[in-house]
Image (cartoon, rainbow, N blue to C red; front, side, top):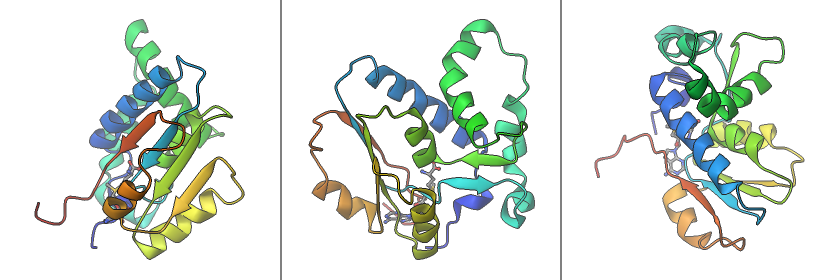
Length: 173
Ligand SMILES: C[S@@+](CC[C@H](N)C(=O)[O-])C[C@H]1O[C@@H](n2cnc3c(N)ncnc32)[C@H](O)[C@@H]1O
């Protein structure tokens, strides 16, 4: 496993993926009934955009760096509101110093009845993700192969939900 998402967090692909994720969660929230999000390749949850990794590629500048502060028309601003709120939540002092990964974005949008299962295989990343969700009873962090763990967690007991499968595409097939 060579891929480290810290080099790519907040890039244009993350923005598209995470904006779509928030739209789907917003849709699930139209019903009161609880749902579960299963994130099979969760990463570390929160990314420091001033880190050596993020600064090395600068990819976030062409993604979230362009979007924050952009002059959006009202319809686009409305659609992106849940996503941009999740980004703001990890930047309480304004600007974009931090970027939320998919499990943190999903967690931000959960209601008290909803649950998140976040799976990450890389031991260091899993450790960091565990620390992000320490003490959070709505989130379960699992250090396992996401492909294998997924089968064991379906169907979720809530019988409603969303599975995000976001592998690094390092392995053929
Ligand atoms: C593209 S990144 C995930 C980014 C994250 N979903 C987000 O949007 O913030 C892929 C992650 O999958 C992890 N990974 C690689 N192979 C895995 C596997 N078989 N099971 C679970 N995680 C894996 C990597 O360590 C990396 O953190």
